[in-house]
Amino acid sequence: MKVVGLNLDIIWKNKTENFETIERELQNQEADLFILPEMFSTGFCMDASEVSDRHEESLGFLKKISKEKNAAFCGSTPVEQYGKFYNRMYFVQPGGEISFYNKRHLFSFSGEDKVYTPGKNRIIVEYKGIRFLLQVCYDLRFPVFARNNDDYDAILYVANWPEKRVEAWEHLLKARAIENLSFVFGLNRIGTDGNKLFYQESSHCFFADGKEISQKSGNFVSAELNREELDDFRNHFQFLNDRDSFSIQL
Image 1 (cartoon, rainbow, N blue to C red):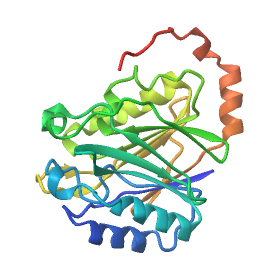
Image 2 (cartoon, rainbow, N blue to C red):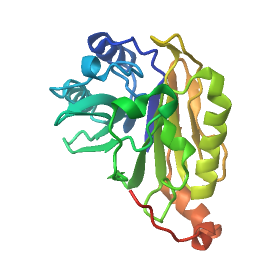
Image 3 (cartoon, rainbow, N blue to C red):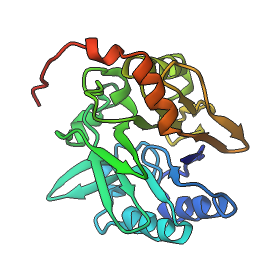
Image 4 (cartoon, helix red, strand yellow):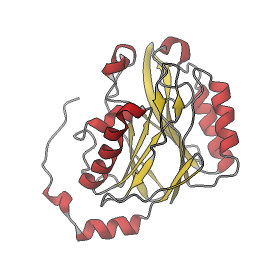
């Protein structure tokens, strides 16, 4: 499976321009799955009442471009539902199937927990024979929630992770791949946001042994996810059999 992530310089609070930029950037790209950053339509914004989707604007865009490209799309966007705000990660398949994950771990350092409502459910989506665990940015710091119980093959992290903390981002992505014997694709934004935070290019895809398997060209990071290769590695190194058993109270 070919996966392509777009290192997007998100335009602050401007959905229309971000949608247009994404379409333009991806015009000549082909993939089975395209990944967009966290809050790809607005930037990582705490003005939830101003920027949140109320009429599925971002979802509508993802459905449209997924159909046009005949590929799955995922990324997160602020959403209002039943009077609450969520940082919601969508996974849209070209056949019209829609899955979503509401970000569980909200970034209290920026006040995200004061504005948005945390999700409660761990979401795994199967697409073209690969099972994807959906995760958003700050979730990366909490390995218990992402622990592989033999129920997924790859983790997708979409993020707005600033340059000043990028060492943690890159090391933790690799750690999640090694400890869970899984592919890990971390897609970060680039550029500068409305809070003057700078984001350097730092998107990666790691194999289960911690080796980087992504290639980079321009604003794109791509990787081939080979399920047979992963299964062979897991069958040889059966480390997951020795994992601790536990339950998470949500």
